[in-house]
Length: 245
Image 1: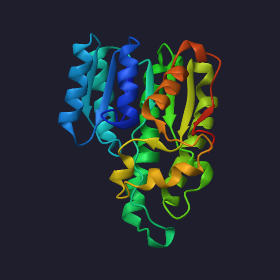
Image 2: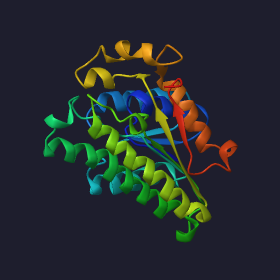
Image 3: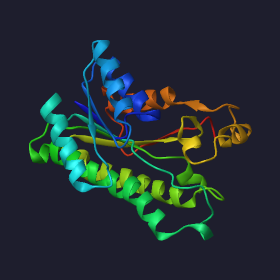
Image 4: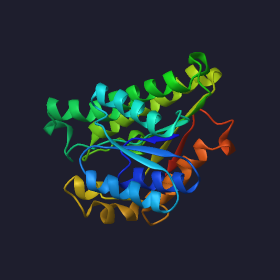
């Protein structure tokens, strides 16, 4: 069973659809849009796949544990985790940030990712009686570029995800778990409108060497490869999906 956090829209939903099509039983979390989550699960079921939606805020530890327990009860033992849930916070310069906003961004993007990884290790590690598995963290090229003028706070949180990926990969490599990351660049999802700047993607595309934005499906394909046996000797890697940016 594969668990995808933040799986009801954007990159997460693309991963859920692609994984289900590849034969994975897929559980996924969502926070607000229950209708969209149930619709996705229903669509996958209608196509012959298995999907299970569970409401969970990854910034809340009890929600995380409950989601993992519910997913395993519904679909069987955990074999993979995609840490996709994340938020940018408002677009603003560092001089305009406040503690409450920073706490929310880091609670979701860093603490939530760490706690989900913890639960996955507890279930998949051979040191805990598990059968091994794979974790893929969704980072961002913002961690490398810094996000100046828009979201240095978000970039900093994804920098923490990059460090987590390397450290955890080395920590659990001998316990049957591979840990990798993908770093999307400009991707066609609703995240840009959600930040209050729906025109941002079009403005920034000319700076992409490939001269176009990527799709959620292109990111999902990379994630599925990292989860698959084809990447059996890959751990601690961070793959850019950014069109050369």
